[in-house]
Image 1 (cartoon, rainbow, N blue to C red):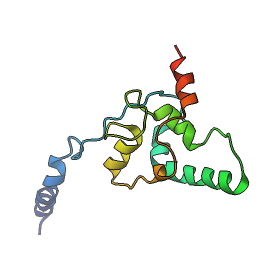
Image 2: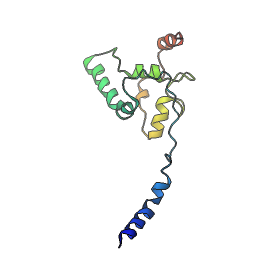
Image 3: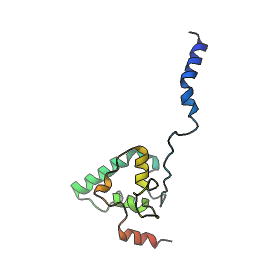
Image 4: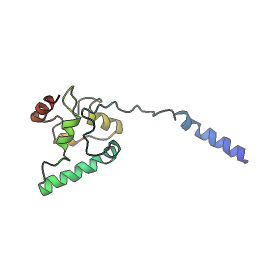
Length: 129
């Protein structure tokens, strides 16, 4: 086969991929970050590594008794809970549930942990300007 033939064959085989190159086929979740800019790491790092970070912190808390650190599930919920329903769960627009549904990942943190900030955190957040 000639070079032109190889090129044409490649274009024909790649045409379906190129046709969808203008955007993602599955719409990304429309997640609102309630308090942007306060996260412990950049968004890309958090998307990839937050399960490992949470497991590492869980081990420090449960096994070593280290509490009250900046890296903790309660702190994540305090910032990412929706102002509409006060939770990270409840619909695909809510922070944790929306991303986990999009990624088709089972969300089991809240079988043991609460999905809304503690009342004291809500009270202090509502007093902010």
